[in-house]
Length: 497
Image 1 (cartoon, one colour):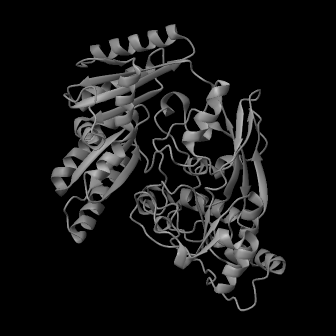
Image 2: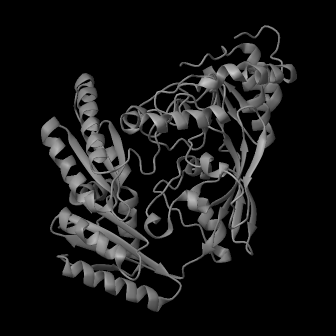
Image 3: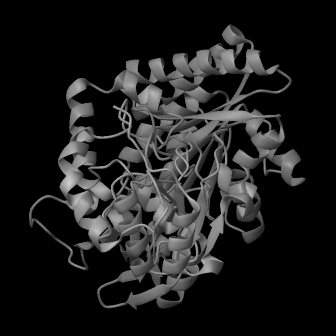
């Protein structure tokens, strides 16, 4: 069922300028090109209007107006997504939350941090570390906003030991599609008080509500940390070692895998040498802890496990210079691959840990099958793989055909191995067809029902996430609520649907 939306008019623009101020409401002809797309997905569409929100109350008033006029609304943070999740594919209103970027409270006794959704991930560590505290989630894109991380349940490199974003969200303030503001969760450590609505919002990609405040759980800052770069003769040897490392007495903070081609691309991109680029495959391990003795024991054990499993060497990153050279390269992998080609797209699958090598080798075979270049790296410790398909000099038609064929094969193989479509980047718009192929009828029905309960008119981030569902089936039952809000927020004379 396709949603029926109101047509955005000059009268709507004037009404929204009255709500938010003329300087915060940008009409279509003045919206910058960056707001028509995200970082990678290739999907481009301008909203009819861009609103730079500055408060939860402002977001609430905008949503009340949008609800009364049946105008679609797309929430947006830093726009660093890779699947079109923050692209206004139905036009309408884009709500830019990046200016809601204040730290509100650091509660050292409860070890929580309350902040607005536009705070950048890279700024959180700087804010809490002087107090001896630590926010564990560590997605690779440090310029992403916390609101975006919560909306996609971002993971990152430290997920092996510490988990993902959902594990560190204690409470949320959320504006619902009709403009009502609700508080979900709080500072409490435990909560068995009914359905966990907070956890439904996390990972919902802006389709259920708009996050305007978050309370995050913090941990004591580890005082000691060390990384190991471990070369292996081939990728299967490296991946076979991962379960042994995770089962050992000291769980690694991160277990990354990388191949030589990606390291060489990063060296060229950064104009900076990696500590070693002679092996075909590498594991990058990190250990942290409160005591030096604990960390030393952990890395010694890990080194013994790796060497016994056929590692060629173990490089210890115990100097600032070496640590920076390793992690600068790892952090530059995505940009280095992008710089090496004309266009690319990504398969962000997650598979059981023991099948990582199988999947990566399968992707290598696809290069020969489809005559297209692929590059990969990822989180071997939790089975989350990033496979990039590169266009290079392919013509448009050939690129689209080969890309679709490669994606079909990759997602089908992930399903065969017991994997899922996305490990941390979300579904957005670009990956909906692939989610639809592996999602059962009952699961799809439940997802659509949840969407209907939160967003009966299908206004929030429409066309995203839910397979085959542009609008939930409960829209007719919502007519009474729509009329109610029309009485309190009548559109200006001359507006139309």
